[in-house]
Image (cartoon, rainbow, N blue to C red; front, side, top):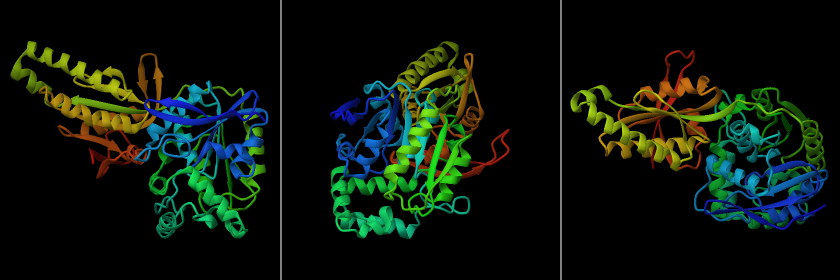
Length: 444
């Protein structure tokens, strides 16, 4: 097996560590879970190394560390899902991988799901192990996951035992008591993240929720799960598979999250599935975040100042909107009379863009309101359509002057962003059969 040296991809000022392993024809990228270190994949005595060694047979395997973990640059805040998707794109570009299969492990599976829905042209196929749409319960719809009591125990274990084999039982079960196992896990923990980053990432794991985007994943998907997994319950993984169109659920023998047979079962399942899907067709539908803005009281402004002044204000509006959109990677889809409809690759970028537009335009005498939603969109010629477009427009219409409103999905996918989402309750939006939870977003 070819084990390449550690290289670094760049996303702005952040450097992301990655390795390329194997010399096969099928491109595969491993998306790590909670924490990782790319040096561990080169060590066959570790679980990571054993899995990578077998998975790299017949593939060109890329392993990488998300920002704040392993050999990637340290950060002071938890990376948002937007940032992690941008980081993954940077790694794919640096490794010259146009459309690989993604293998999402545990919490890494949720970002893989969002990436596959957002960039279907960059994902050949998707394999998810030990993954759920969320990892904490929300009754009555989602009864599985880490209970508040268990979550608190992990917090205490991080505080007292990080780097010494914290919560080994949760991941390894009885094997944790085998001499040397806790020491091995402790060494991997020390190499993968600081105690503070481990705590911050744990809190983020408990808040992630990608249930609303599952239906937008059209990439061929294999979900691997096992009974006895205390991180991602089998029932939660089964619900995940049922939510992704045409996903295949494969039950592995019962065992813990990191049972010892994983070194054989995971590579075998991955190689079989990605080989079958190597020539799968790509979808044209994508998951996008929509931002709708509207000038409040435009008719009154026109009447008060006249046509010439209003034209100058509209010119200022367009110039400022395009500048702020560019800052957050947004692209204007169309004018909507007195506002714009824009598209983004991630919800946090769109929400922050809306929050920046409000004061930028207000200082030019242009009060606006904004609405943000994320969902599946489809381009037809120069027009964008889909339920997400309608929902975003309806949410935007609810906002008052200076407000940026979002859907719950935007909130759920903005974990770690530092934004504050104020619950405004469920509302029946015009033309929609079910209520939509709406939130007012603010900067903390």
